[in-house]
Length: 170
Image: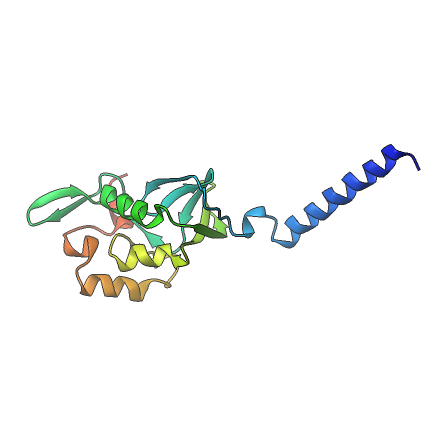
C-alpha cells in the first residue's frame, strides 16, 4: 500500500465516524449542548436569541412582541422591549447551553436552554416576562400562575396574551 492510500483510508474512516456520530445524535450536531464561556449571544426578543450564529426560539414560552403595548397606571410602554431586556439580563455573562427539540417553520431551532444551569424559559415565565405557550407545552403553566398571582412582569399591567396580540395585529 502506498502512503497516499493510507491517508485516503484514514480520511475516509474519520469522515465515516463523524457521519455516524451525527446520525446517532438524531441527524444534528446541535443535539450536543452548545456551550462555551466566550459565546456570541444576540437577543432578538423575549423568546428568541442567537447563540453562536444559531437562531433559537425558546421552547414552551411566548413573549410579548416588539412594540406590543402594556399599560401600567395609565402609562403605555413597549412590553416586547421590556421582555427582550429581561432575557438579555438572564443570558448576560452566563454559560448558555441549549438542546434542540425541533425546528420551526421559519427554520429556527426550538430549544430548551439553560443559563448557568437554570431553565431560561422557566425564568422568563416565572418572572412574568413571557407566558406559558400552552399550544405547544404545559411545562411552564405553574410558573405562569406564580407570576400572575404575584403580579410580576406583564402580570402587573394590562396586556394581551402575545399570540392573541399577533393574531389581531397582522
